[in-house]
Image (tube, rainbow, N blue to C red; front, top):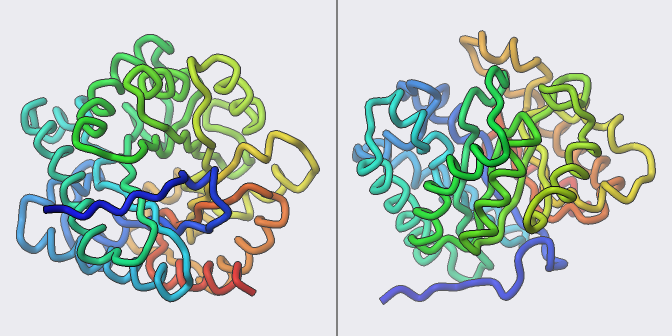
Length: 314
């Protein structure tokens, strides 16, 4: 029988710092040498080698969380496990339902076997319908709600504690995702990606995007995050005093200073400087009073997470 350790509070309701995922996909691709069509991690769960890699990856992060006394927001490997990307990979909805359910069950098992004594939240991950770097086609709010409701419902039915949409490029998709989560009844987090100028790929300022989602969504997201951007491209955006920054509860930065277009063309891993990245997180936290969830994105791994924890603690 599963002993489920559910924190009383979600990250934005707690004084505890939570660690989360780093650059899982780039780690699998460049460090473990897996083929990653469509940059999708979920097909690897079908092989013994892939499941072993997931275990190695997350075991190290659990150790870092334990060493630093943090909670852990444990992400499912389902960023690409939505209908359009699944179809691109040759998988129908029946297969994708099994994939998403299995991902939640795997996360629960890790919580039990690796997370003893830690406050661990199982976080169902939703990815953008299109390219996470290039918003070529933008859905209406209603279309986004219908599209994302399918995966959110599967993840919620499997027992996640929350859902997060990572690498969103535009406001209507974020509102639709939040509306779908509200209708299904699961707490949600919206994470935008930004370009090197600190704006969304569609051109909006981050503060405007946050305000639009909060104003238009059926229920406000629990908090917002930013992911897949280097701190150098983000720090000017938050250096001034403003109330909207209190809505940012999480950060998952890239190790690399390269633009999205440059990252798309990379054949080698740019893992940046872990110590420098950790120090930049510590500087950013001075301007983000409600930052509770820290992790990484492209090019980051356990080294970066350890340095982020060290810098924040000091």
